[in-house]
Length: 161
Length: 319
Image (cartoon, rainbow over all chains, first blue to last red):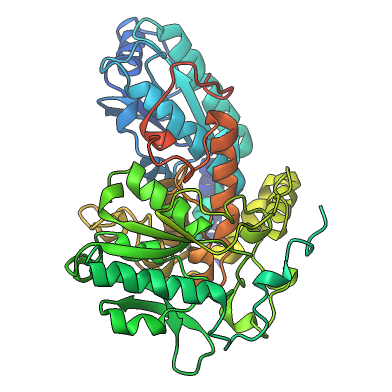
């Protein structure tokens, strides 16, 4: 093999290796939030120009009562590494009682997910109001860091093969 | 409590082909009376199969057919399934009377609580019960502790709690204070396992799922006319027997029964691949009882826990 060709190949290899090391794995977090509190809180964080981890994909729903456990399962199926569910504080629901219903559902659902062996550090529940932009920023940063430490959700992704 | 002592000789049905015991006589008499008077149009009960090796559901519409009715420890089926709206042909027959053990009556109570049937539109013939066999093929002519399912060892409704007529003498049996038996022991064992071991355990079991939906078809409380598994716009649950869809299906099936499952155990009995569905159902039932103090099937006037709420519900994981 001519020397110049060799050096080109080496160079290519070096570049791909470098890319692999610099583009470190980043977790995908799916956040199911309610329209009236948490989404507004996230919006406030944005308009206040607060910075937080860009790993989160926000899915807005009318109310936490609208969040079916299937959504969470679907998020994991679509290769989310972590899921966050957030809505109005108890008593603050725009529809009066949606989050009370959701809370009951989550109590059951969390038990179920734990029982089948899902790491609960990948599934977070929170109350974030429209004024709690700082809480939202901290929450996203903490969840992202925690999931990043755990690495990709290989158990669930392994089911796709 | 000494297990076995409750098994009084008065109730012993040593010969599975014995059709002349007192309970059966009383049951047939009652069925005949109800049909003759025209109080009911059909009696849902148990009858022998052709080889008299198993019992099978029978639907008696004529008073002269009541001789077909039997009752013995082989009567495992939960007949309340036939009260649900998926059996329109049975509903078309007219007002039913149902032969039900205490555990079946729990399911009927949930169906009433959920507005699926009206209490006045059915006649419940409650049977006192000393336990049934876990699977009919285990029957060797005598009922013993080791062939009874976990639900029977923990049964507190051996004397029917909601019935128009009660057939059989009162049974004196106190269930253990702390639920025990195979299902509950396994739940405890799983709870102490590492989380990744639990995952392995369930993935191993769910891998066998063939998506036959027998668990859902036999469940008296899976009465939706269109199941979420049948909806494909969007396709929420994959229909192929693939690990990913199997997990989604089994999680959602369990979730939809949270706070409603009465532990009749029919899903696990119907499962062709022996997935331990009772474990997952009972784990949720226990959590619902701990969190909301509710046990399904005892009060037909109380709403199921997941359709109501209490502003003071306690949890420690929502940050």
